[in-house]
Image: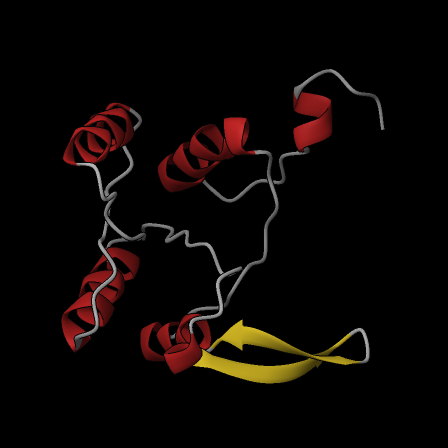
Length: 122
């Protein structure tokens, strides 16, 4: 899930790359149509990945995080509840994100250590 790129050439390049990796894109919208697209993907057994580090004023809620009120998006929790599935937090360097998402959508969930993937012993 994501917002379309402002530059149509960048958007086209991103969609082509994702298609090559077997990753489908769902553009974020303000209607329930987006939620139904996400639910359909989950019903087909797909994993849905989205960035949650943005706190848009119209969608944020403050929650205690390490003892401080911190803004988080409401929509991931609402989508998870609507779809009847858990939220699985993940962190990955940008260069590995497409490969990890692609691997997760094609097979069972597995843990991938980004550091070991680039040759760093943990």
